[in-house]
Image (cartoon, rainbow, N blue to C red; front, side, top):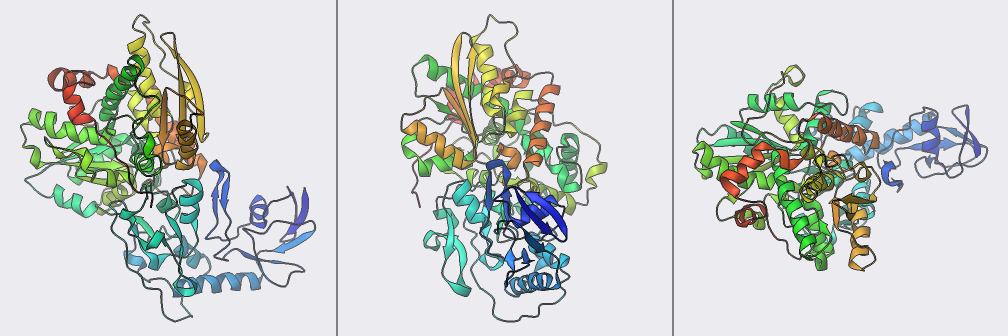
Length: 580
């Protein structure tokens, strides 16, 4: 332990603690910008580039960055001296002098850390005038917009992309005043190995990285009297949207969300959970088929488009192991433009499917040619994030917290508890095992429902599940860095499993790149996940194959799970992509 004094308060902290951590343990606030705590994966962005957290230490001539300076015995620190405060204010003023002044129309207005710092430090004028960095905005991606003019060189995106997700898209380019964080050879985002997971967006303190905004296209579709516009909502959205309206973290707002969507003008409001149940019907069938016919194992869940693109770039030799199932929202689109169109007597070309997702990679996924079909064309027309939906609700003047609870539309709106837990790490594979267990153990009147060994927040988890006298070896990974470790073991023959679930985002979809900003607070993610498990337990039906509307869909239209028509509409393929 190290004894030190901060602002005349004595404190004993473990050796290796930073001044910032020691100050926080005493309830002392030191402003930061480049600092980023990633407690769930035991990693911290300590590059110390912004110098906003400077403090004065007795006996040291220069101010020191508190985020990257470790404590020493007897150290006497002052965080609020006039010298330290003036230095912080000057640093922020210099950042602002090289920053666009379009706050009123900025995507991050009122949710920008640089803006908040300027307010906290009482900055009301920009004293330093001079040329600003000019750069072209990169809008090539369907998911992420990169605006280097708003970059403050905090390197958070670089840490997240390179160290956490191990994708390696971002690095510093050029030198001096012209330095920017960009892609290799300054390529457009669409031409890189970016998976569009959006984790870089979730940690960016400004609007240097934002999601592609598709809300204007959705409003246009809603206002077109010749279109039937259908909204479908992912499970993770309903446990995070409330945060945008001041509700406690983890509040389930499913009924209010449905009501808001109807008031916005959507013709049909349906549940992606229905399609998640459909996904399990196909994925569990595929798992059983591979096991019984000596097929390629392990089977990897394919619901997450970011991790699918990751394996296309990084592990092309393993492209025969992911499930061929489309993700739930893509399955929903395929069924909406065939079965539902027939039921409603509507021309499929007049149907517009809007997916409301916690994920930015879904925007790219919706544009993939492999997910279009000759029968339906594009499965999903537009994808908007949880954040975009919150903005649209405000635009429509809807008082969200006072809305009454409403139910999804009947057709393609019923779901089971298994589909709800798709939104958290381990949920997809648990849902698949629930159905596989019931199918394989037909003599058991009460097959197991809860497989709690598959739950948790560890980056990589392993479990052995026994069903019908068969022991299945399962692995689960969330975060692409963990996925890389797991896939490397499989590729090198060092690990054997029957099934694997991979989610690109930490904690799964609850921590998606399109969710309300959560500051990488693991407690926020735990509460969101807990709300999903609570909803699962409250459902009268908790296995996907028990959904009566799913039975009706197969009886009236698809035929049988894993059959010819199901393959045509609900399955796909993937291909190798360049590493750069």
